Image (cartoon, rainbow, N blue to C red; front, side, top):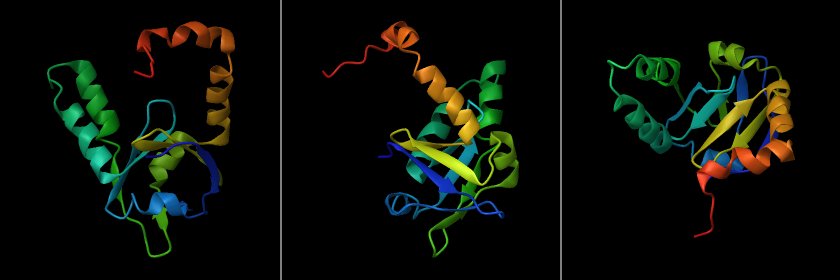
Length: 145
């Protein structure tokens, strides 16, 4: 399970050295794809398989389903970790997410998001709006039982 956030450096060749706790999950092929918020999704093989099964179960006659498929599957790339614990991020995905040398990885349970610091700051600003938070999440019924 991935949680928390970490700041890492991306090399000029778009190589990223994964922290030790990510390496075990990424031993099998992993996947990276375009996220919904000008970010990237980094998924283990089981997480990618589960999400892609949901996407592929939608109707191709639905225009929004086709858009979702193009976004999620059309931009996906299989990535492999080398012996040094590095993965290579595709340049088109780095460009989409506005990634520079510094990146932020945010754990989301079964997957992680990769952000540029500027885009992540926009998310933080939104999340720090306590007045809005009092109402925006009520439909999710977050409970301990």
